[in-house]
Image 1 (cartoon, rainbow, N blue to C red):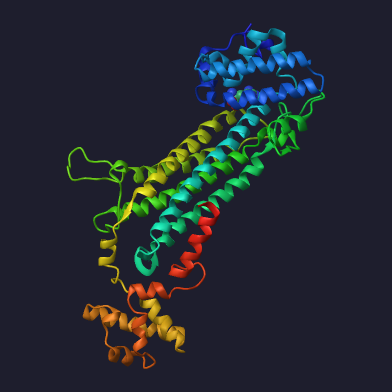
Image 2: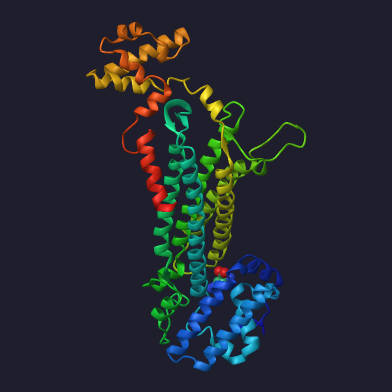
Length: 458
Ligand code: ARG
């Protein structure tokens, strides 16, 4: 009567408004490929356990291949009455194969089917993001190799703190993205557990073989509790959370470069091809790409809360609310993918404005900590050395000069353990050269890290 796959017990056709309200084909069509892959594995398993014949299996598999081709060529028309991509594919199959097509859904529900599709999709999405993160890391490592001699101020509170080599900045980002990749790899282990065969929520009385489908689909394990897996979207929340952290890292990089690109800083020049102008102010060159990376991060973060709120009030097991999960998943993935696609060229194409950086490199007492450590090496207790250098800094501020401009007498009157050799640590360049601890921004430790990363991903 209703023409629906589930229509047997209904006497009335579904209201057209309800069809429009409940459809998901407008946003789940992109699951077609994984849906067909999942169905083909399911059909192989059904034949293996004798629920369909080998001939039926072969017909189903080859017709699903045809349908995949049609979809790829854009030949499948979407019909709201068919609700989602899963029903579109099954109804096309049944149209062609009759009763053989009607057997595909044996021992399966759309609940475990949708979960399986989403896990296959998420697994591929993780691999795609990982590959793009590697490109971003490579771009930073190449820059580190290029910029290993350039000395930069490093900041805390956006106030000049200590000097580091530019390469140290680039490898700092490489590290953040490395942790992002580790998180994705960890998330992937939980994604890669098969829901298929949980059926609606309680499993099935049919002799299906869940290990078989799991293996065919490359899943490493089979979910042990059908109720749990029917309602599980944890892996998706995790993935989108990982994406939001990637976006946060991209956003703070973007923010830093937006600041550096300002006239006030002038540390970096962005390529024309990655900037835009103003329709009224002829002189403008704006860092819109970086701003949009920062702006799009807000969307990804909103997607995490959308998913968390979506699952927080759901009783066991499947609830239709879960249909809405795809919107957040796809949006977060598309957004981060787009940001990561545009980042490497920008990282490689930007130029540090070395002259401009050098002009002010001795401002801001970047060598004050080096002077204090010079005193410590001569036996001065740290807190005493801190106070002594603090007073010298105040004196320089009064005289509008730098620490290295002070005479030996001035320095010795602050602390009589100081001798001529102090001038080897004063000045920003000397201060950065003195940095030697593991993981610090000085020459030898940075060289060591550049070599480490080149060996790993170069
Ligand atoms: N269109 C739905 C989705 O994508 C299919 C779920 C069907 N399950 C159900 N019990 N109605 O989530």
